[in-house]
Image (cartoon, one colour):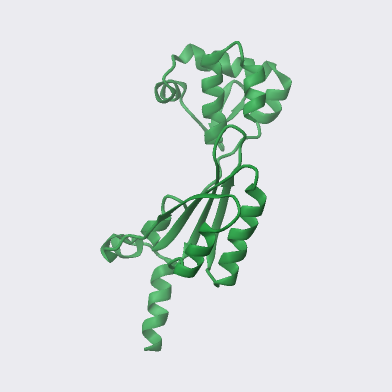
Length: 197
């Protein structure tokens, strides 16, 4: 995608900055406006966040809509909801694994295979392997990564780096203890365990 943006916006660096922001955040362009799913995003706020003036945003929208290949892409963009940022509050761990581009698929496969071998419950898998960015794999797991799995992931082909975001240690900061959540998987699990004891 970045190659497409580079090609079409090579003579318009400010517009490219806007287009990259739209793409990275899943904001679509339709009928002269910018949307987050079906909610219109105010141009003035967008300009402030990106660091350009509103005129650049309007020129970018106009350019995208009159350039058929760009129009096809940008009218279909949607944000992808993810548990990555809220997982530690729910008591889950997030594994952020950086892999070599050349061994990306082998590394991706091996990591999932290791989690399966160690019966690690996977809640969500999200991955980015774009040409101009480091290849990353994000995995949300319910529980704690076993030490053996941790060691073996670091030995996987193409492995570069592993960051583990752990749950809040203070139970009062868990969402299920902190606010009035009707359903919290962690609370359900704790209640089931206490019933067995």
